Each structure stands twice: as structure tokens, then as C-alpha cells.
Image (cartoon, rainbow, N blue to C red):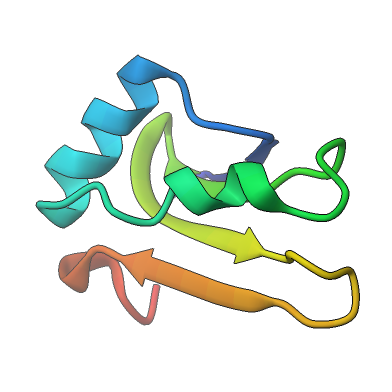
Length: 79
């Protein structure tokens, strides 16, 4: 196993498909464009040897509070 973490502001169309394939839905991304600081990454992607195994999104509309959502593929949990 070789885990890496990537950060991005907004997922590309290719990444949206990758997230959809992993979690069987692509729901969490649209609201990250409403973050108080649009220069900060809103997506954090966990990969194992280049394969997406989980992600975390941060929704921060005010700069004083945030909503964090995360998903890890069930077969990858506790690794």
C-alpha cells in the first residue's frame, strides 16, 4: 500500500466520475464553490497506488464554522 493525499478546489469532470464510481453517488461537491475562502482546497482525495479509495469535502460558508463530509470505500476502511 502506498497512500497519498491530494487537495483540490473543485473536482474535474473526470474526478466526478471517479467519485461516482467509488461511492455510487456524486452529491457533495457543488456546495464547496460557496466556501468563504475560495482559494482554499475544498476536496481532499485519498489514493492507494493512484486508485481513489476515499475523499473528504469541506463546506465553509462563513469562515467560522464548517461542515465536513467524508467517504471511504467499505473494503478500504481500517487500512
